[in-house]
Length: 204
Image 1 (cartoon, rainbow, N blue to C red):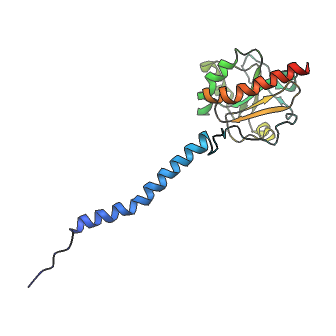
Image 2 (cartoon, helix red, strand yellow):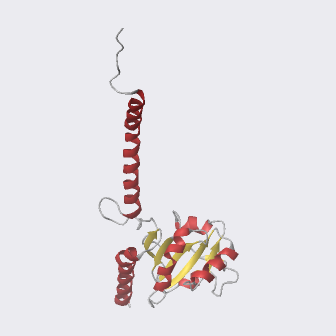
Image 3 (cartoon, one colour):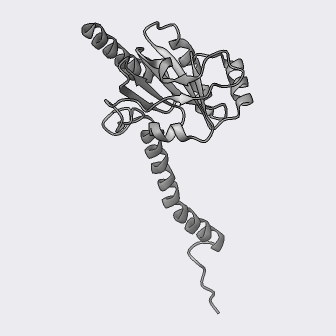
């Protein structure tokens, strides 16, 4: 009696079928990783998508009447704290890891006398916020706490950190979503500050 021999051993055929089955998954994961990177950094046009257009750009900023951060040696964040000043309003929290990453850049900006930096402490515990600032330094000239996120809703916050540049006339000039880094500072924020400063000088 003749016994037919299979073309390949059963274990090897099973391994081959397994390999073919995971190829689509590998391809999908690869495309997802590339797409995620593009969405985080830039879209296909090369535009920085962190500079998300806002319906508030060009409009008067929402009212600021936030209580002070207890224990912080700076005043509360009110309209008076930004009136007549080119102001950077940064939304942050101690539990926000990207906020920690961008904090050195905010500290760096304190050397620029053209801008007034203030903070909205978003859904945070005051003790934690104080420890955060004590560890990393305080770049803010005023801080308002927003424990329930009501102010963030008024400002149209997508997620933190998030930063707005407000002109001396109280109008929102620029919005940045996500943490600042060297590239976004050089290519986005500083040009916006330069433009606002020139506009202010020509108007004065």
